[in-house]
Length: 246
Ligand SMILES: Nc1ncnc2c1ncn2[C@@H]1O[C@H](COP(=O)(O)OP(=O)(O)OP(=O)(O)O)[C@@H](O)[C@H]1O
Image (tube, rainbow, N blue to C red):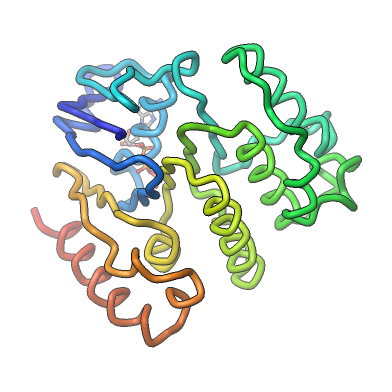
């Protein structure tokens, strides 16, 4: 269980997250949605241990720190080291994690095959397409066999077709090794297609936790317009109401 209780995060004197409490069952995907500046990235940074906070954030009853919990983070710019090849990016991340957590990780070859990266393993990030970069970042995250996966708008830079393929691959891989996941997105369709629950951030209000009505459906069913459209319109309206209410 991921448990957040009475969480407060501020920059200097400005409070950004006030008294946030919620629970997320293990091996579930939580989507964070909210207007720009409502605190989504701040929340991820607190989870990553990059910002001081008051309150508690625990996974399986243990305080989350980069040393206590195996974390994988896919930032908005994907965070690939430009001077390392795809292969080296993944293997270096594995080496750091193995040293930090004293555990052995599997060779990433099967993951590279699954994510269609074999032809580009010796290329540098600047020599990859957007979709290939995104898959390399996913490979690096899954190769760490994380207990907690954090993704900050990781699909946002892709065109709609490449995005749909990357999301399907992400879910396929995720189902093989389900990991508690928090993903930030501005895309309500993406949140409905990938998540179990949604945490809706608003400015000056406490975030609200909502169940995804499509959570029980397979990805193939979630992308069907007849299943998606109703929940999409309902949530869009709810979000606008939440964000516009004073
Ligand atoms: N390093 C910082 N110092 C001071 N204030 C900051 C800092 N980083 C963010 N903020 C402020 O904190 C608030 C929340 O920012 P945050 O980046 O968490 O929002 P967000 O919901 O992730 O936005 P976006 O969707 O645009 O990425 C904003 O008012 C922002 O200006």
